[in-house]
Amino acid sequence: MRKSNISVLGIGYVGLCTAVAFASRGYNVIASTHDAEKAAKINKGLPPFHEPNLQNLLKEAIDSGNLKCLVDETEKAVVQTDLTFNAVGTPSRADGSIDLHFIETSSHDIGKALRQKSAYHVVVIKSTVVPGTTQDLVKPLLEKESKKKCGTDFGLCMSPEFLRQGSAFEDTIHTDRIVIGEHDKRSGDTLENLYRDFYGKDMPPMIRTTLATAELIKYASNAMLATKISFINTIANVCEKIPGADVKVVAAAMGLDKRIGPLFLNAGLGYGGSCFPKDVKALIACSRTLGYTPELLESVENVNRAQPLRAVEFCKQQLGSLEGKKIAILGLAFKPDTDDMREARVIPIIIQLLKDGAEITAYDPVAKPTAKTIFNSKIHYATSALECIKNADCAIIVTEWPEFQELTPEDYARNMKQPIVIDGRRIYDPEEYSKELRFTAVGLGK
Ligand SMILES: NC(=O)c1ccc[n+]([C@@H]2O[C@H](COP(=O)([O-])OP(=O)(O)OC[C@H]3O[C@@H](n4cnc5c(N)ncnc54)[C@H](O)[C@@H]3O)[C@@H](O)[C@H]2O)c1
Image 1: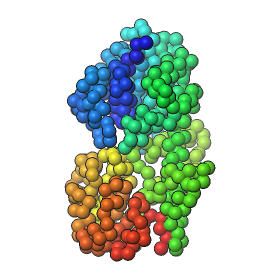
Image 2 (image 1 turned 180 degrees about the horizontal axis):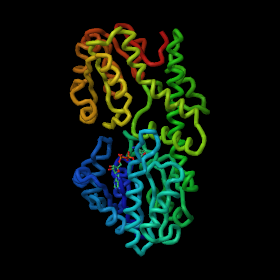
Image 3 (image 1 turned 135 degrees about the vertical axis):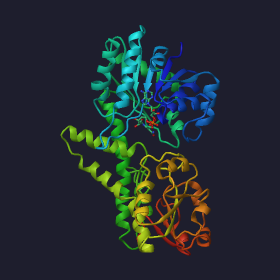
Image 4 (image 1 turned 180 degrees about the vertical axis):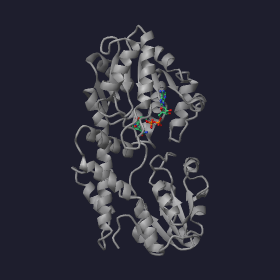
């Protein structure tokens, strides 16, 4: 049987990993983006962002001729393929609601292409969109521009993506589950057949459902993970008031309960990135529009907004006034193994420290170029962790990069002006680091 030809719109983390995954398994994939610079990089086999294990596979996909990236040629990409994954960005608006502008413009383009096609084509929304978007926005736009009928002339599905940045490609090819929201049975069957062909005997558990349920599954999943993080951070904040209490031990014991599980119970300075903050806010905004106020999610969001500032509080407890104090920030990316700083918890920390008059030197193994676009010359940038802590009055672990675990208490004591270390991600053993350092950690009662 001939393998389907696939087009992918939006070539960020989701689009690029989807495109490379299908190309690496012999499918002919055409990607399309507005960003000429990004397309040029991709066509040379260079990922436009830091993502482990992606570079070699992208290079192979390009060299094999299975993947090419076009600039502003969505119609051409769609016309030449059988199925389109739409993975364009869906950012937050200022009020927290979701900005569907890219979904709208890309749906126009896909619709225009469908008008030129006589063969059946399936459009799959991979972007995270609030319930109702595929049925009430995408479908009418496709029908209007194509002058065709959804369900008979072309198919429409919503299949959310669950990858994690830092292991994006691995997650794409080894996902825990496939969700197919379908407009009609033929659309769902076509997408299921494609996934079955792609995964073969490793086909993950699959849920077939309505478009709106598929859309909500994505939000509910991210909201649950964000809730676990804000929950354990709440317990961490309680622990800090109780002498001898340690949230890390509390979480480890809780995690042994099969009903709770150990994952996403790491107390710290809160969650960031392009998904959790945006998706929690969008679910709140969407629920409010529907006449329901999701108070639990509002609290999840409030805890997360306050949590990074715990690091600044710890600094003040140790140093008093921060005016002129040298603070070393270890980690800028929102999590390890990425250079993405969207909603990174370090941003409110640095803004507050600067307001308080501190002098900041930061180090991150890969996110310095991203940080420069945010902070320019307002902070100093070190080229190693040791250089970063040199002569500092206080060091704060903001991202749990593995290389920070290699810094010993002696490294801090020998290099810093004052040996004050704040472990915002719980990477150090408090007993070992408290011996010769003034050591504070999130969720550690004094
Ligand atoms: N990043 C993640 O970890 C992740 C995980 C699961 C789901 N998602 C969701 O997937 C979607 C994409 O996320 P991402 O992080 O890959 O996005 P991203 O912001 O990294 O990239 C999106 C890309 O879409 C491009 N684009 C916008 N309009 C376009 C158009 N009309 N045609 C072609 N390209 C266009 C943008 O230029 C951008 O390069 C979002 O809805 C996001 O919420 C993201």
